[in-house]
Length: 213
Image (tube, rainbow, N blue to C red; front, side, top):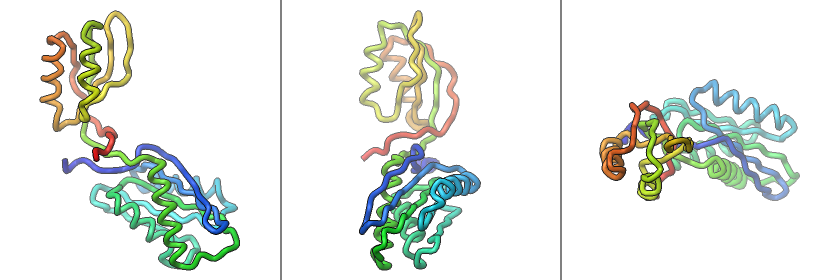
């Protein structure tokens, strides 16, 4: 789907040590350059005693904005390798900061490039890549007698999910369905529940979905 794009689900971090240098990778989803710069600024403030706080970010489905910084490391050993990692995973609207606490052992240009690439990949993995898809979101209610059947059926459907479940006189919940599959899935659900389900008018949104492998 051309409107879909891959980003990360949440802000997260992870770290490792190479030759006594501590590398910490931070990644976050961002929508604007202001968001990216605020994220970077926050990490730098939290780690102002670090040897380096290098960063990279890509914004826009067509990579309309690409920025990176080596933050004092030899040119081309940090920011650019990080951009390479982000692009290799086709991720956009994501900012990554790689923080290094120097351990006293020089890594060389090749070692630095590998370490910063690894830091970026580690951060992205921690932040969990997801695919953002145009999604129809419905407020629904259903009698208890049909709930197990619906829940079991949707557990095998990758393009639909249930959330915000509330148990009262009936079961009330939010149904999210990818826009390209919505018509077929909604009709299937109506049939499955003997048309006893009440489905509200959809609201359109971009929703994170697991990347199918």
